Length: 169
Image (cartoon, rainbow, N blue to C red; front, side):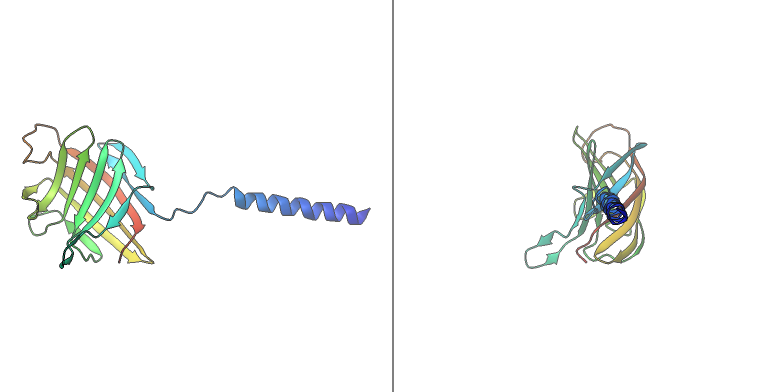
């Protein structure tokens, strides 16, 4: 009788331990891209990513770090080979943050000689680490509507932006 009670207790403990492991959330393999856009928090862990678009016979032309929010896409635009450190969105670099709204309008902070958009808005992108196949960083900006569009819309504010995504580096 004692053996049956001991065996039943061991099986019960095993079942409880196994169930706890099944209750754990699945590991996030892509990472995350999140921020507040005009004070509203969003998080993208499914479609966010880092890409290195290439030009024929020239190789990578830039690094794009991209994530979706409720009303569009946010893209951080950096040089093709990025190191750690803070990057101010100013006329001394081609770094930029662009926001494309699904309801219309593009917003832009930074400078880009490649797209013809002059320096506008302000902000920063800080690459904190590039390790273990991931890139981690923070970002924020005040992005006026793209000056080449001829629209009169208030600027968009991105605060508390952060990402940790699989990196091609």
